[in-house]
Length: 201
Image 1 (cartoon, rainbow, N blue to C red):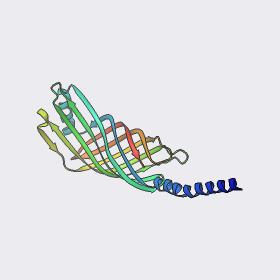
Image 2: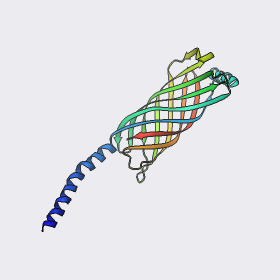
Image 3: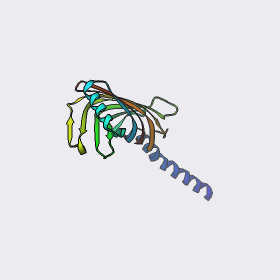
Image 4: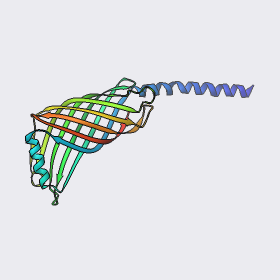
């Protein structure tokens, strides 16, 4: 009799403790969304001004690196598989010579977007879309002594990622790729990259 009472007490305690745990898990599934990341890829310029600048940089450079900067995405859940987010992202197109002088074209984007998990069974696949404003910053000359900042333009980015945490809660990593299109002062550019992110949701 005493054993049965102890067993019932333990079961009741487990049930009592499981209620807030389940509620917390549900709350986290619908909670905040934060990610930061970094990637490498390339960028294409389609109009004469920026394309000419990039070619001039490339002629004098010993090293050319294009970095995809997923600097910060933060937002909240609309549903369990849909998040509304704000994004600060960009592309750094850097050119380095043997004297360690650097010239760089940076395209920055400030946008609003969505992150969508379309698979009902395994919630690993993530699709993303961001729309917002963009700006271009060009630094050149000895030790970046000269620079030029553009007016505000338009930026759009699409992304596909694989979230390694299929439960959709907690801290996880994500690998994937993105493409960003920009129209800034009439100059068009298209960047592409593979990225790795840290993600909390």
